[in-house]
Image (cartoon, rainbow, N blue to C red; front, side):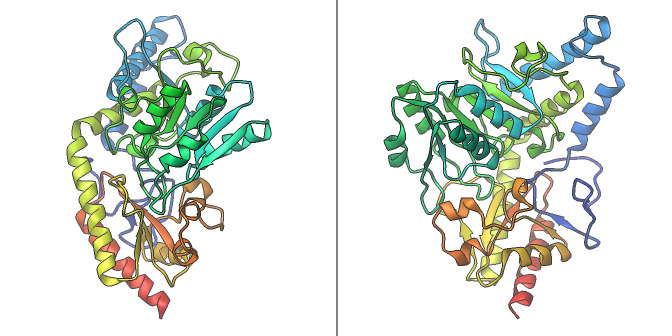
Length: 401
């Protein structure tokens, strides 16, 4: 659990204005509040007066030491090899979106061939895949079950000799459904095909280790687990050939040039270390709170549907459909009532189109058009969840009347 001198009447991030005296923030899949301990670690880093870590003078060397200590710690927590002659790489990026783009466009190579993604990927994977399609690559999308789980039988059919890359997310950002990444990675290794997984929503919620998953690369973003916004990483297995997206510098072996933001990296490392120290407690609490939220709503609104409930899910994510109400109207009414949630990915928040994830699952229109995503954070409380369930049910009944 996040600790610190934080008021109970919390303010949502990104300058959002609270609608009522006590707003309840249930949009942590979009971004989480920074942990006060993370903010303090970054504050101390700024006060230390570190210079550009690429500079050769003493202040630059000081920044380099802090950067590399944080990199090694992150690598260790995420299950990389760090202490031998063949270490895995932690390539810092501006966040999960850049990490996904670097993976898709950097791992695929230049010779067109087949690329396989799932039908429920985040737009930061689906978008680069669409770009590859325009360049002549054969992009195939694996079908999913009604619970949103990738169909392994369909994947086996799609995996061919000319497959250049596979990218299947670890945990879905809208439904929380977990994918069989280990099994898919094993099939990819047998076929000699590199595999990337978007682990942005899973890191900091469940144990995620590169070597245990067996993937070639995985993406992570610090602001999803109470770290700072603007920093993420692509974790890459040793010996992997990666084409950089950017040019103009030698930082990070030229794979991601640009001055490394030492304080952001320190915040990233601190947030991940706090998760590792509190992992069991956080997972247990989030699962309990998620289940309580769902059960409370189902008790008051029996026609409600928990999307993906039949599959293993992330402990903090709940996608709930309230048939008979419009999702956009629900979202706005809940905002007025002081419950911050979403209709899907924040990266598509300006779109009025139904969720492509729920449509790919084959759900009926009355479910797709009434579904909202509620996502908890390590600082969510029992009282907030109880009150949120009450407000959600009350708003639904008022809209129905």
